[in-house]
Length: 126
Image (cartoon, rainbow, N blue to C red):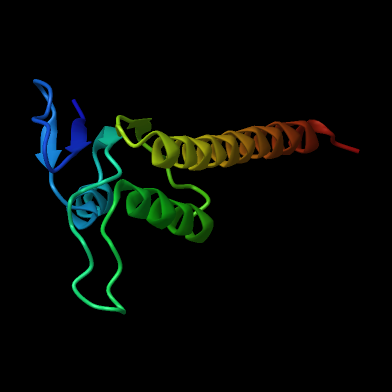
């Protein structure tokens, strides 16, 4: 059975989920493998400490997953949910989730077509 991750600095994780407080924790679990589902909050209550420091949010997980997906077309994404109360950020995050899912679906279809074409090509003996 796979791991379910709950990224939130305030709300407790539902039963059966592993609570993470920071994006880095979620990404480490994903890199290790076995994650089947994640649910992300946006606002993690971590204001940047300096001009160059980036605020840590659930969106960071999604942006990193985009990079990981671009670097590894075979990457299998976990099921992704957004549970943020920040309506504007949740909308943006869901748009990224949809983009990740569309790209993953398109790659699955492409692999299936290549596989099917390989089978067809191998049967044509002249």
